[in-house]
Image (cartoon, rainbow, N blue to C red):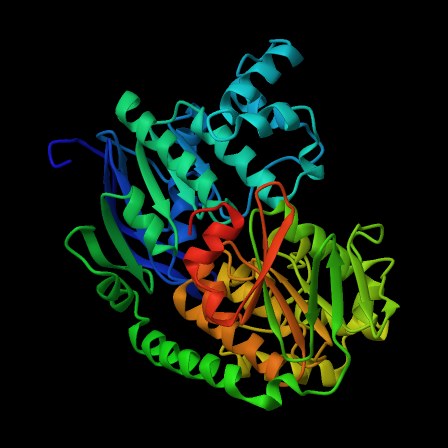
Length: 506
């Protein structure tokens, strides 16, 4: 890689939003033909830097060079000419247009040209087939707004892969992909690099994936360069986490979590909490979800989502049979489920979680207002919101600031915080640690464990098996077609058994 030319050179990049300084003289260089891992904790400045080099934000200071030419105040021209393509952590698709239109239209630059539906379909099928040929055929005519978050991620990646860009910016691209889809994506990236000398800037918190695909890494910490172009063969996971500023808390919390999970298995009080369990049944699969249980769901999205939708009122005509004490449990809508004590945290933070146009206090109190049928902030809510921020160590300028002033990981903590004071009977979480750093993951784990210890039953879907192994004593597994294959308990819950039960690599 050393003989490859430098494609992007960033020096002393500075960016502030009002009084908040995000980038404080950050440096990074990317060479053609490499996959460059861009690492750092939530709020360190990764997404801000990506938005600067993709033309979505203007830098306040510093210089940018691309292919030897210095860029002016904005890098927007690079995105306009197609030299840079980006997959943002929060997807940038148009929900009212079809999959074909979303993929093909950015590539149609003729001002007076006519749109060809047949041509758009061909472009979209070709792009999507790079990752999933079956999905390509089934989805090309569907509206993007009707797709799941998992499916929209595939569309966004396919659009970027076929853009013809010289630099591809991938911000958490695998957060909603199965292991098989991730493997296919990596194969496509390697092929494009070999054929076109493409450069890739890859953001992820999954160290296993980083080592599978990346050559070198740069680590950002508090808006500054902590590590510059380190070979991933010469740096350990522990050193990476240390440079990110997260080692001590991670190590201490890991030991505490291991002790906690072991004691939970052996403590009779955990299984004897009062309250009837919820029983879920489909075909010959039957599972009780009792107070204080943390039940994992493993497998590709199709299966877990059918159960999640049935439990939370998103699908009141589900094939799942759900009962409590022999009586059927059905909710006509999510708000009715919330009033019945069912909390839900969607994996689609941008579209189904955070209320982007409302201030932080409204986001924190959203679930309580639904349950209590109230709309306006009261004095006690403001105090309760501030108490939550303090307890969760969320740094916010004000309760009245918008959530966009917070990092993605901090926004995710706010979604969990909504339910802390309500103490729901059941909390359903859909990929709740998507795109968050190690420290924030540990904090979310601790919040969920706290709710479980208070008697809340928890259902947790994750495609990260190491997460299910750490958190759950019982896991319901689904195969690739969405059928439940069995219930794994206690010592059977390990990465190998989960891979075998789901048909997905760990």
